[in-house]
Image 1 (cartoon, rainbow, N blue to C red):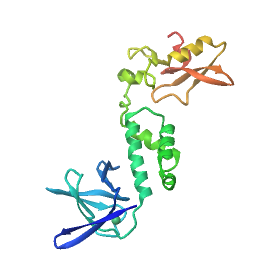
Image 2 (image 1 turned 30 degrees about the vertical axis):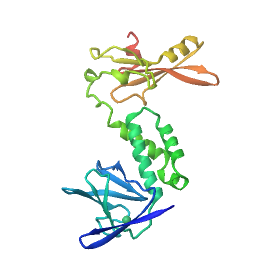
Image 3 (image 1 turned 90 degrees about the vertical axis):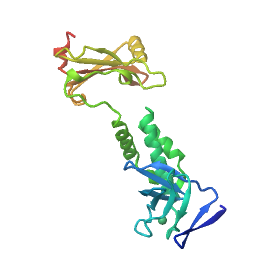
Image 4 (image 1 turned 135 degrees about the horizontal axis):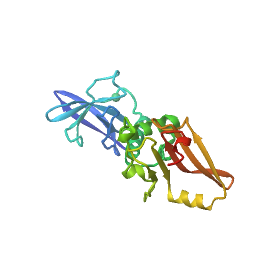
Amino acid sequence: MRSFRISISDKNKHVNIQLTSAATMEVIPSNKGGQKMLLDGYMYTNKSTRKNHIWWSCVQGRSLHYKRSLKTSLAMDTLVSGASHNHDPDRASVCVTKAKANLKSLAAQTREKPGHLFAQTLADLPNDAKLRLGKQDTVKKMIRRTRGGRHPPVPDSFDDLTIDGEWAQTIQDEPETFVIYDNGPDTNARIIVFVSAPAIRLLASANTWFVDGTFAMAPRGFMQLYVISVSLGNTAVSTVYAVLCRPTWNCSRQ
Ligand SMILES: [Zn+2]
């Protein structure tokens, strides 16, 4: 790759930074709520913002060389000066950091399944960076954590529990009703039933329904999760989910 060297005078001392012709400055959010600057295989964190410029420090070289490794304009779009590094660039690490930031933004903005987001991200990474993305389970946890922040708070009591808007709909391009029954907060035996339109069609066409009430998987505050499944080919699919705050026998009249 063609490269060029720029030399900038900074307080009587020359600092050099060698850039490839394709080098562009890229700013992404950091884990700590700040920013990271990616430039030509090197990664920098925002060190200090001054009146007319920002100082960045090289992440990899934190203990290896001068703290103020890069100086940019306040808009973070113009390089003012850069110190040379005493180590090689780490392009794979930059790729992974960028992919993770992108993954987090997709996690927050879409309802795409975590497994699918992981597979898509992995496929887009160059081979030498794939191994550094992390295990699927770890990445999926990160996605769930990112999404957790968007969830409504867990209510203290059933009186405060309402399921509405997107939370009462299915996850798809054109969401459909998912909560088909909720006897509301003014009851001492709350039941909420979730079922989609395609699942109702499966139920209607099935000869046999399998009904299972489990206590262990009930969401917090509820006593029982009730699931109705039907056969589909060689397997069974869950169609209706009901959460109950009393055991089935106490709710049967509802
Ligand atoms: Zn460095």
